[in-house]
Image (cartoon, rainbow, N blue to C red; front, side, top):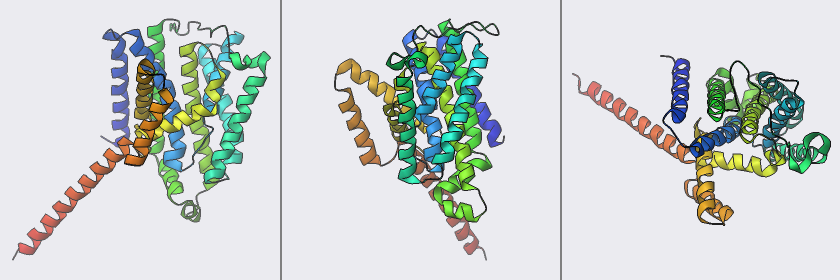
Length: 333
């Protein structure tokens, strides 16, 4: 079985596991936690396309999370769009926005890229706050998000909403997995490791970065749509700088070199947040200590450490096999 078909098979298995959750009578709180984690998981994993695979640290990625949420919510509140049409509109709007912003940002490197994305995010955030008649300002989109039935699917039913979100989530994961294992994905790794060499080899570095920037923005916008459906609204904090910071924390907590690392980090952060809220009022202090321990102790995400140790063990085993083969050849008459 080729890697592509193996990945698709694993994606299908993951979807089956998610769909079994309501069938086994999981309480609504568990399903809500999973839907919340799926929305923010897409934000973190889309950001890792930039950080982990391209070497571009964005401090403003949440603006695309918010753009998807608001575009979808406003389209549905207008009453002129079906859910699939509003979903497509949200992705197209985010892609155009990312194309304009990315065309400016990707020509800069390292800290300049990071702070320019932060500047654009604060611009988008202030537009959301200031355009009260359109976005609702600091109150967000009030009145709920209409959920008309389409193709026999009623998203007003929480179980059907959970299934719908699970399917979209797994599709997005499968798309991102195909991207990072494709020749384009290895081109991004080359740019991350040595963009001067990539340019010398004839790669259009700014164009490759821009394509990755737009793709990651579209994936983040899907997460925003899922969260909008889940909370039946869109709010300015979706696009605030702290949301981008949380996505970076999720990557740190899980790992940037393992594909599912950011998703694991999302679950860890959400569990830590829920537990600390339940037992103490010092949530930020506890989360800060945990993040400091991981960053200073491991210096990388837990999955990164596990993957590195497994690779070292695999290489050690391979070396032993080669050494044994060399000794066997030397002992032959």
